[in-house]
Amino acid sequence: MRWVGRAALVLVTAALFGSVAGFARTQDRPPQPAPPVQGGAFRSGIDLVSLNVTVTDAASRYVTDLSGGDFSVFEDGFKQDIGFFSRTSLSLAVALLLDSSASMEDRMRTTQTAALGFVQSLRPQDQAQVIDFDSRVSVVVPFTTSRPELEKAITSTVAGGSTSLYNAIYIALKELKKTQARSIEDLRRQAIIVLSDGEDTSSLVSYEEVLEQAKRSETVIYAIGIRTREPGSGKGFNESDFVLRQLTSQTGGRVFFPVTVDELPAIYALISQELSSQYLIGYTSSNTRRDGRWRRIMVRASRPGATARTRLGYYAPAS
Image (cartoon, rainbow, N blue to C red):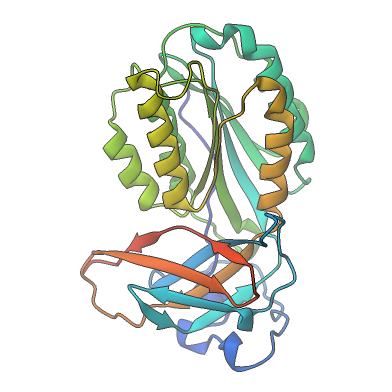
């Protein structure tokens, strides 16, 4: 079993412009194109909070033409100065998690086809890995830009065993965090797309541990829950529903509960569209205490009818 992945996300760093204090405040002037930056080593700005923000209108369509001045960021109720704003879509590092437990046997071909469609939507510079999980977790292929390798990994999954959902997500989060970007060209947005048909039955880590790891990451989690029983008919359904909703809402992602597996291609396409429609916002917190506490984040878009979505918060640096 290989638990090796190669991807990292350092969305915005102080080195991009020399120092955090040197960031231009986008709300004080019209949005300017980012100055050219040279490759090379750089230092991560640990006090800079970076956010991937998705904006939709009243009809749930993605809004992609906003400027920095259209956004307001609040931390624990206090408005923050936006230091960086970009509509540029950075390259992606996506972990595709596929449930191959025994209960998925009748759906494997359809789920594989849908995942293949998502891989085909990736740009040449985007990386992805495939993680197969049942009673065990296996990185079938580490992060790569090779579409043939990804497609081969997806079609090689075989149903059998129990479901170790928490283990799979925990490992994916850990592996995405391992490699730090060493140049501007390495900057990538991180995302996990997990497909599962039920509650966890065999993980060694708990839901609480996975949730804590997700809250400490900058990875957006998208979940597709294939329901195997009617809503409200049993404890298992309610637990898996709750878990997927919590993991996705905490990280700024979305959860989908298709009625049939035939909806999967459209769901993967929607996730791909969302990832390419996000804004990148960075700010330095006005709260200078290094107490390691949880801080809640809220982002508002000024356009009437628009709703902004991002991760719910982060842990402050600790002394």
